[in-house]
Length: 299
Ligand SMILES: [Fe+2]
Image (cartoon, rainbow, N blue to C red):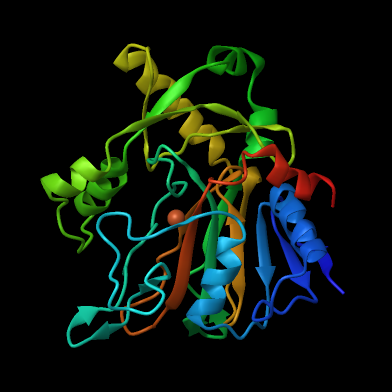
């Protein structure tokens, strides 16, 4: 029997009573989708999952984005399931070694935005009995509600431009080993615009949809005015009272809602402290279809 146990913090719940290696029951999925919208981050502890299980569960939420900067590596089984790890084989990282190590929301740089991230913790570094490499979130439902009325009024109907290269270039400037994007990779990811205030398709409430990682400017505003307003929003949305950190345990399957949260990966582990995560990024190909989101609202 499925059971949702809220963390009691500003975000998050643990889901008990579901084995994600088995086919999903429709009524369990409805409970999960509803909980995802309302709690933002869901943990399914003690799961034993292969990459095919992670892929199958992810695809329930929408289309899985493959490699964000190039074609899928079709020599691998389940190429849509990415690897986040600082593990090296033959001198090469086996996956993205420093993914997401500053505040952002996945895939706001795409015309079809990101909806759900699905991460499976295979190896989690632990030091002195404490897990490292946590994932920290901030609650964009709460942020919207707390914004001053005059800021909400200025943002009403506004759109902002999101740019994939902003985060990539920022990480390189901070010393990331990731290679410079090629002209072809930049061409694959042209900037896109999204509304700054979204109505969340599950909760029906408004959220602030911008993030320091990818949001470059507010459309139609002078650059200085846009920079000042975004600086205000970036500071506001990261205030401590909106934030919650997930501390990983191996065999956690963690999912989060990219429409209602922003996040970052905490890089507090050293090169020999190995972290290995399987990841699918699911696009918002289904969730804005009322026939789909109705599943959650009916739960
Ligand atoms: Fe991310």
